[in-house]
Image (tube, rainbow, N blue to C red; front, side, top):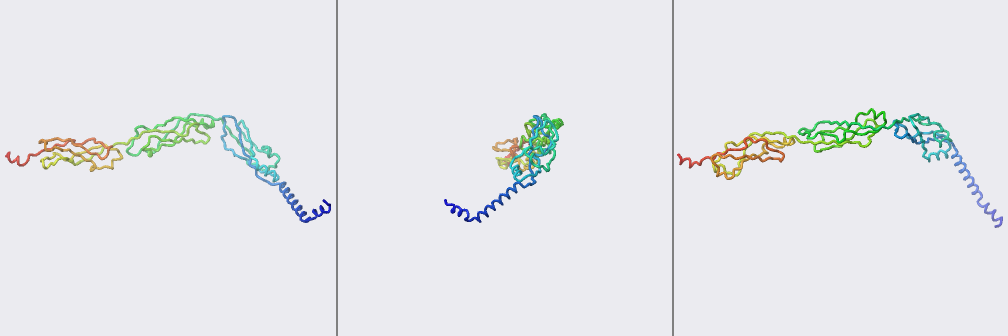
Length: 320
């Protein structure tokens, strides 16, 4: 290609090319200057602890430590992309002083402040213990109910695990109370176990079952002066009269039915079928129709009725 043509290509739009070069240089210098500019930023460092087997940490320690550092924008941005951990291995309780050299990845940074400055780590040997369960009840059974089988736990003891100093002081574990006012109609209940210390845990179970059997009490109710109903006989036609037409009825009934039924709901009757064949004095067994299957007759006084058959008037005149 001729030199003249090459020169024409270079010279063509030279002013635009010069402007583009200048702008690119400015941008490059600005970015380079920004990335190397020093700033102060907070870097979170996560804590992980390694302790001896069968030991536990019994105090509260932070999950992370904040390092306030000064460095270039590019360095700090790179650090923020990383998940920085501080691994601490201890064999016994101790206080750790955090310094500029605690976290290797931050050694080249200028550390202005560390929060917190120290870590207090308390560890203690783990202990297991079998302790009795304290069972309590609250309120009373509703009126009219009683225990046929009193409440009892399916487990009397529970195993707990925790720091030795706390477990040694633990004498018993409490269950939540059994509310007797709300257990009618059931035979068992699951109760949660409670621990006052957050450091102590249950090893195998956190609840206990309590079983019981509740029966309803029966009461005796007396009804006086109940009328006897005479069935299947035209008593006037055969001149039959009862020597007594009222009785006293005493029944046993569930407590829950005591106000549900009144004397009018009970039918006392005598079946007088074939009454034309009755003798001068005839004794008939009385029966009771009950309004509920759970009600039973305790006493019927009297339980029989004596019927008297009068002579017809025309026969009486002939005898005179």
